[in-house]
Image (tube, rainbow, N blue to C red; front, top):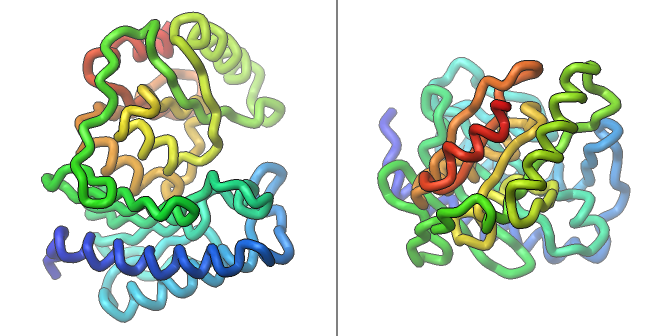
Length: 262
């Protein structure tokens, strides 16, 4: 089954607009927020939105795989896989902060081919499909244009250092300090989809996953949006630990790689 990426992206934008209204309608009464682990949260709203998105996608694409944050994986053998993060930033959402999104991506053979990130509080919708460019509410995005590392505002994902092996913890601490010395500012939003979209607009200039453990659902849609806005993305092998994602304008990407590879 061949997917029309442009039409499917339009369909997904409409779907997430509906789910965004659900998130806002229930914002003042989120209910119980449970801990999935010491740093990760979920609410009934997460579960309900994910279930609703899955039901719609299953009806339209019955042979596709479905992977969510809160529910069981389906059709794992399919070359097409939908990755769903119903509320990226549940802690912010439950605390009535606007730093959350609904994020959905379609992967083909493991690579994102389309993605939509909807920001319910602002009503903004970021989208991209392979070869189609990145858009914010229908307007093209061209990514950060910063070309000097000393001017860069970088968002980082940081690990739970107490869980790391001593050598990996030491690597993280050295790298974080060196990064903060070399760039203009370091931010840690904790919401990967938002950081990716703001890199596509130029509000941020780089994104680095210093953990290597960010879940695919958190960043799949953001990856295609960054790529289609002209941002360079690569996973670097930086032992100890798993590969780390580095996303930045081409003009500064090599310098950032140098910081992580020291």
